[in-house]
Amino acid sequence: MNSTEQPRLSVRSPADMVAAVPYLLGFHPADSVVVVAVRGRRVVFAARGDLPAPGADPGPAARHLAQVVARQDADAATVVGYGPAARVTGVVDAIGDALTAAGLVVLDALRVTEGRWWSYLCAEPSCCPPEGTPYDPAASQVSAAAVFAGQVALPDRAALAAQVSPLDGPVRLAMRRATGRARLRLAALTGGTSSQSGRSPVAGRPHEGPEPVDGTAPVGTGSADRSGPGGGPAGGSSVPVDGEVRADGAGPVDSPRAVRSAGTAAVRAAFRRQRRGERLDDDEVAWLTVLLTHIPVRDHAWSRTDGRDADISLWTDVTRRAEPDLIAAPGCLLAFSAWRSGHGALAAVALERVLAAHPGYSLAVLLDEALRRGVGPSQLDGWPGSDGGSVLRRRRRRPRR
Image (cartoon, rainbow, N blue to C red; front, side, top):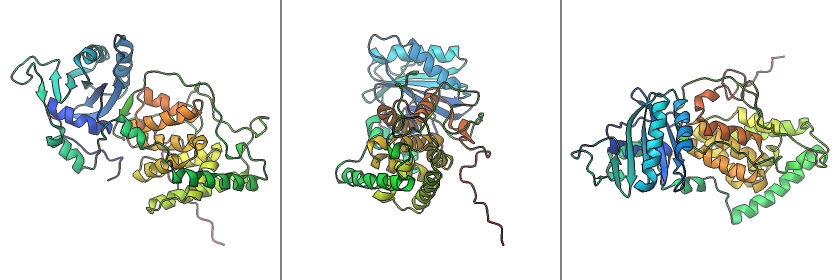
């Protein structure tokens, strides 16, 4: 099943909601607060944040999370806190108040602790006993339906982050050698004048923004102004722009035409191989990652990337195998494709890895800011292209002679 087609789960009770949340996020949350937003009878968004530190004011984080949910054009929400009552109750109350202030109806407010759930809004002992209600996710019909539909709930967020972690051992050694060959190949292609020569992208100051929020949402709602690749949203942005620099630091230069041509060919070959179910070999991955340090090549790859399973698989593989100084572009492409598919948590962990290594890489900063603010995936329709949202463009046929 294509990952952009979101399966429907029937949620009719608090127990169903508790069972559904891990599949909405892609992992079982812990020490977290989750808001599930609905429009009518359909779940349109789920966002997760860490519980505030003990003694911290939950107000700012609660208001931010409520603002993120309110941007989804939802009309109601359920709040679920995971952890001990001493840490959960205050933040759940604060989020409920913030959601109400934002004009949303709070359907329920739940706490999940050690295999039991409690409702803060239900005072009926017959359905919400004071000792809590035990639940078994494995025995839930919601869990069974999610698994049947192909959805996965990993044990925790760390397991999700491990899916984008670098490969080590013999794979790393082989990639290091292949990348050395790719850099020599690039230098030969450009006569030794190529900007960066396949080195790491420009880094700037660390990005600071609102509290991180993992989010996921179905694709297909909303619209947005278009923006060009490598820049911010239409109307301007304070986000720094990626650039290429001369090896001697003399200033920005344009990518040589030969590099653009080689990059276009490498990107198209990678997509063809992936969609045939073939894995790129070490030299192909190394050549692609070196070429992706050139912004026009990266933007060509970006324009061909959508939320298809094959796109996520390709950029996950390239990101994990890339040398550490070359992960920025493939990591951003992975984040973009995951976000387009509605897998906000996967996008978040990919961006965390990129920003840890390259805190000033502007595409990562741009995508991270959008995730933090809860911008819906469908608002990226047509971005970065300008052809009405088409990602894969048909070749122009040469005129017959």
